Image 1 (cartoon, rainbow, N blue to C red):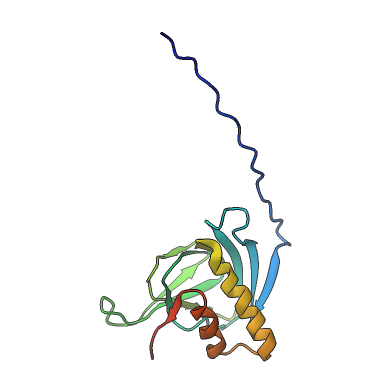
Image 2 (spheres, rainbow, N blue to C red):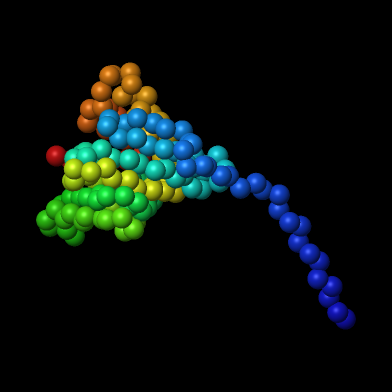
Amino acid sequence: MSQEKVPLPVPDVPLNFVPAKTGEVLTIGPAKLRVMEDGSNTDNRLGAAELILAPHQAGPPAHWHEMHDETFLVTKGTVRFHVPITPSNPTEKTIDAQEGDYVTVPIRSPHTFSNPTGGEARFFNTFTPAFYINYFKLLSMLQEEAGELTPEINKKAMAAYATLPIPG
């Protein structure tokens, strides 16, 4: 008895193309964030953004995420990743990631980042699941309402997205 192979139906799901000069752009302090995937095309499995850091820009307060992983692909300049003191890391570490370097930050991995140089830095950032894109939208809105970005505003936005600041 031969089994006839039944072809599977070809799915009809469109791809999403974001041209280089498009995407929702958010202002966060001196940084610009271009949303490239907000999760609406991936059932919230993946979010992606490009972050542009100004020269000598500090990043967010050191923190960890309880509900999402992040990746960072540096596409221009230097992004300094700060790994705060933890039980397994008795001294603060810094990693200077250059163009082409890739950093994975799993759930519960304490970190922050900055631009230590006099030139612009850029990175491509992913979030799984995608809901964390909304943290940046909230942060931008809170900053606009207050007229400036403060650590308190940042921590308020973090709290809404299962992100905990490092005590101290």
